[in-house]
Structures are given as structure tokens and as C-alpha cells.
Length: 234
View 1 (cartoon, rainbow, N blue to C red):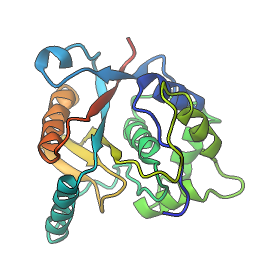
View 2 (cartoon, one colour):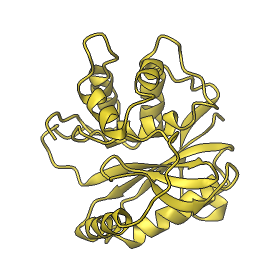
View 3 (cartoon, rainbow, N blue to C red):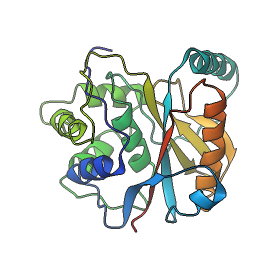
């Protein structure tokens, strides 16, 4: 990866401020904390939930699992809906922004975007692109296209802790979990394609995402996990 950004803090306030500045209406839906995976804690999350962001530690064990999964899926004839908004990550430390774009991009039928905003322009301009082309468009926008670099840098400084330097290696990674066409999809800009985690619905998205989060926990030797929902504004 050539360009590198400061990593975003896993903080709903940071994500809401960032998304609002990009043209997302946080009055109806907003990012909020998921305090745990138990049913009582999941019940505290406002409904409906449009997406879940999962932050997890990248370990040798998780990387081995990712590579084995990729090898297995490449040998199969996958059926991936063409209208899933998915993009590759080509910018270092951009996984938080990619997760935000995946969450919003797959909720466009439920949310409001300001007509003259970055998000509106980006979604319109990349609608017919491949995942690779979208990643390149984010990293190298045309001169008259939407540029997110300054907004991302400002958001990275809004967290409660000082961000590391862009050149620092960060071993935490965001993925988005969204429901599309009756299935739960994992969207990770490092992977070759969206990952199908089986049947899901708007009502069960949160509990289904919690099950996937437990699988991620089992694939690592760390409990440094964090979950954030894009849900009805409380």
C-alpha cells in the first residue's frame, strides 16, 4: 500500500462526526456502542440495525484463518449479489473509513445523504465500478472528484487517544457486517470478495453479527475486540 492514513479510533462519536461531515444524516441513524455479545447487552442497541462494525486484533492465528478461507473460497463457484457495495482497501490504516463506507453504501435505501456531499458523489460515481476500481478511486480521486483525505485526518485526531503515526504498524482491523438479500455479509477490504455468513434478516442482523464476532474471537489469542452498530438514532 502506497498512501497511508492515520487510523480511526473505534469510537461512535468519532464515526458520527466523520460521517456527518461527509454528508450522512445522523438524525435518523447513527453509530453507537455494542457493549457486549450477551443477549441482555445486545438488547440495549436501538433497532433497526443497518450494519455492525467489528474491530479485531490481527494475529498470526487470524491471518492463517484468513488465508485458508481465501484459498477455500477461491476454489468454489460463489454467488455474490452484484448490488452489494464492496471495495478493496488500497490505503494503509484506512479500514475504519472502508468499514464506514461499506456500512453506509449498503444502506442507501434506508438513509439520507446530502445531495452535494462526499458520500453522495462517491456512491454515485463508483456505482458501476468493480471493488478494485472503487479502492483506487478513493486513493486517487480525479481532480474534480470527491476527496476524503483531509476529512479522514481530522476525524483521526478527534479520538480520546492520540493516533499513532501513519507509518506505524497497527494490528487492529475493522470489518463491516451487513444484511443483503436475506444473508449476512462480511465486508473486509483486504479480502478477495464479500464473505457470506448465511441467512439473516433486518431483525436478526445484530444477533447474527454477534455470532460472527464470536467466531473472530475464537480465531485470535486476544480479547481486544470492539463492536459498533449503525442503528436507529436514540
